[in-house]
Amino acid sequence: MKKLILILVLMFCLIFSLNSLAFEKVDVTGAGFATYAEFTAKVQEFLAAGLGTSGTEVTVVDGTPVVSIYGTSSAVTGTLRDVVVNYEVGAAGAANVEALYVNVDSEYATGSWTNAIVGRIDYGLLGSASGGMAASICAEMNLAPIASPGGSYYNVHSYFNVPTGATLIDSTAFNYAFERYESLDPDHEFDLYGLLWHIVGLDDATTKILYNNTLKIQIDTTKWYIPLSSAEGSYTTAYPIVSTYGGTAISVASTLAGAAADDCVSIVVNDTTTLAAAAYSRSLYISHTNAGIKSGNGEGNGLGIDIDATANVTSLYGISLYSGTMTGATINRVAGIYTYMDEPVGTVNAISCLHLETAAVSGTTNDFISIRAHGLQDSIIASRAGGAAATHFLDFTGVFAPVEAFNAAGNGDYSIKCYINGETTYIHTYDAP
Image (cartoon, rainbow, N blue to C red; front, side):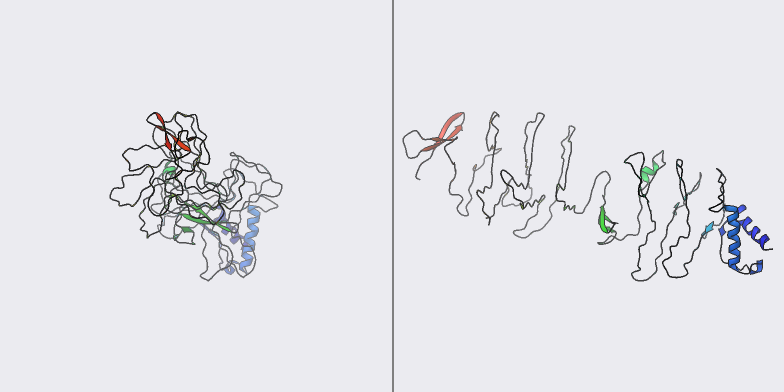
């Protein structure tokens, strides 16, 4: 009697593939079994005989699974499940729990693909999610409503085991990764409308997973933040970009090509700040502190610009500044370049608001400063009131061009050579006012 009932149960569950396969605690004493344990032991014995054991494996044939379960239903409500595996932890402890364990062993090279678990949804020709959600694999974690539950919790734990002695290669044809995403989309519809990830339910706030344009992750024991762009094809953000790197923090290599004007780096600022006296707003701010000894001709530059040319160009400027019409604005002073040097506490040999050096002599015209007025100016150099401007107007440390010894009789030893309207002339200097 016991054997007959057991065979009937397993025939319906395994051979004829009922709508669902579920083993739950039931009253089996009326079926001739003294206890539920006796029933499950017989089931396991039967399954071992029919499905194989570690010592006696069943040979699998292509197209003929060892176990098949085919379910169908015309229900329009409820939750329908073909297989339910329910494991209940009965006591606290350090035991490892795996409610469902699937293992593939191979001492041989496998085929085009090998998967321990496959989840697949096939909508055929007319099916759809009908406004709902479909997922080939769903993972759900439900935490207890208690404070500070110990441990780590993951919906998915991807474990990649590379034993000692394994040698991997750097290749684009053979890859090693925790995850792989593959799109089978010949018409590129998914490419057009799909997403790499869809994250919902996050609160945008500091210290949380999502804050402004960053996503928080952790590598080993250090938290990192992935920056996000608000536009495709570029890194676009409405939030600060900060680098604390000790070397070249930002390196830009660009080729400007074509017939249109272009910029390698563009900074566009609309300054709407309202500031009090002695406050600043700047489009570009550089703070450079020399904290390392530089001997010989070593330099520290707050801003360094190198220019060169390998093709014809009308004008080549290291710095080019243009001022707009400033319509509607009242401004005390506008200057293309403003320099303020504070009194140093350290020992400095020479201080100059503007220092010019040149080794160029091959031009048609060579000069330190070139000026061109597009409108009549009050002066070329203006020394504004507000205190002593300088001890000397000009300071030449020796008699060299354009300074020459004064050869005519008079009060003074030197003249400054000038070139006015195609004629060489001199400004004579005097020893006394």
